[in-house]
Image 1 (cartoon, rainbow, N blue to C red):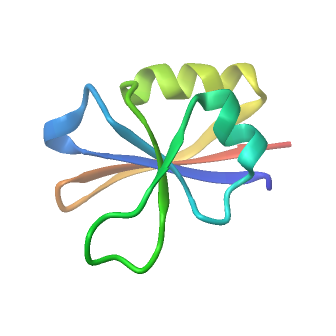
Image 2: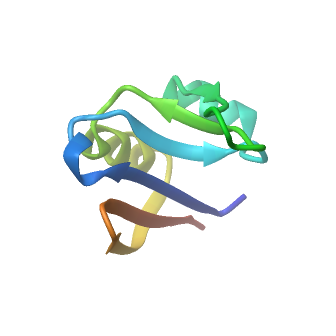
Amino acid sequence: MPYLLISTQIRLETGPTMVGDEHSDPHLMSILGATKRNTLGNNFCEYYVNDAPRLVLDKLESLGYRVVSMTGVGQTLVWCLHRE
């Protein structure tokens, strides 16, 4: 899985950070220390870590991921990463 999206709410820049969906690589999620959550009302799960996005980006860089793009969508910050 070479692409990865991570995101956080603008008011939560210090965490938690969403690092994957229910189809994400379980091994990568365990390396990041992510836990799977199902938010009330959603019919899907997401992986979260309590770290700030900057710390998550540092960990992912050490694993070979590079930021491709970053944007703000409403009150959410989103980063797209790719691993060669």
